[in-house]
Amino acid sequence: MSGESSIAPTPAKTVAAGRRRFHPAAWVPTLYTAEGLPFVMVNVVSVLMYKSLGLRDSEIAFFTSLVTIPWAMKPLWGPLVEMFRTKKAFVLATELGGGVCFGLLALSLHLPAWFAWTLIFFGLIAINSAVHDTAADGIYVTVLSPKQQAQYVGWQGAFYNVGKILSQGGFVWVAGFLEKRYGPVVAWTLVMSAFGMLMAALSLWHLRFLPTGGRAKPISTAQTARTFLDVLVTFFHKKYILWGILFLVLYRFAEGQAIKIVPLFMRAARDHGGLGLTTEDIGLLYGVFPPIVFILGSIAAGYFTAGRGLRRSLLALCAAFNIPFAVYLFLSLVQPVGLPNITVLVSLEYFGYGFGFVGLQLFMMQQIAPGPYRTAHYAFATSLMNIGFLIPASMSGFLSDTLGYQKFFMWVMLATIPSFLISWLVPFRDVSSETQPGAVRLE
Image 1 (cartoon, rainbow, N blue to C red):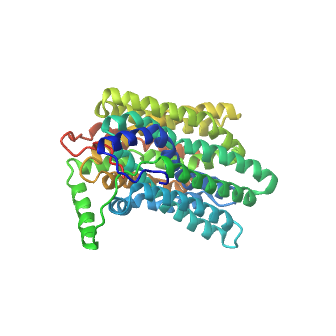
Image 2 (tube, one colour; image 1 turned 120 degrees about the vertical axis):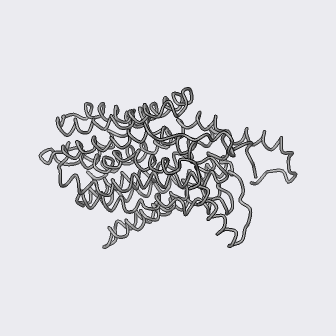
Image 3 (tube, rainbow, N blue to C red; image 1 turned 180 degrees about the vertical axis):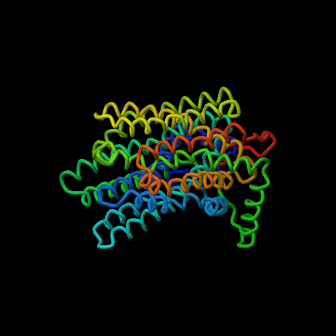
């Protein structure tokens, strides 16, 4: 960067300066906000956009799940991030590229084949975001010590879901406000354009404050292939890896059922079993209290788990994650009137969700990632986690159309059982002798 001395500092001074310059508080919150924003936009906000534009629930759930496949392909991105340039370079490129794609998506809403084009751009955004997530998580697990990972995991989860405050709350409220005045096409054009500008602004922040996460050494194509094979082989040679995979796939099984349908259920007319809320109502609902209590739940779980250890905490985290989905069953049975009442109940669910999601994050960091390829193996883990989310999410629209909202949410509660079983049974491996991140390597 301009203004830096051409004289290389000593290693001790480099580390000391890097710690002052790249303190986790300067980049963990914004990095995970940038990671959460596109994910929520593609997975949740797109659902509301397509609902406003007149698509059926089954179509919305299926196609908005289909475009999330890149998050389930992280094993392809992990080795690339390990082998080429710096992880910071990938973060900057994908944040800026994602911003451009959101701008093009906004313009595509005015095309005759708008549905096909918006799906294409959502898919490109998902690819950008999946590579970004891999590089961002690589920086996190490489730069921070295991103790720091536990300390900051609550903040990581909290600011990942600040993306929900901005996208599922603020941006949706703006879209609802504009829909009433200019119609859904103009409203969502403006919202997607603004979102693209926000992503570009985050890339400028990270240009200044984000650590590199280590610089890859140039290697040949043959070495690349051997490295990829070694990444794959060492992943599946980890002790208890099949149990770990089963845990990653099943922990979010009930959530995958619910997450696509909840906003559609809230938008659906009351005589069709829904709550009859407007887009603007949903923006208000998700814009304040649920995200705040999610953050509180995430932070509380981070300190709760740091004190007790993951093994002793996991079943409690699983219960906090799954039991509050009963809120939506209650809402479907009672159909309460009044946004404040609904907000209180949804906030209870969000606190449990924030508390319980920490268990999944720490399991990936502490049981799956440790070893010589921390970034790539963490990417494998998040890929498997997303497969566990993608499959039930893609089916959820057809199930809710067939069962109706009440019976569907009854099914969601039954779908929590696999998560409890695997959290109870999964064995833990001793990773104390494996490669752990040491001093920060600065480039």
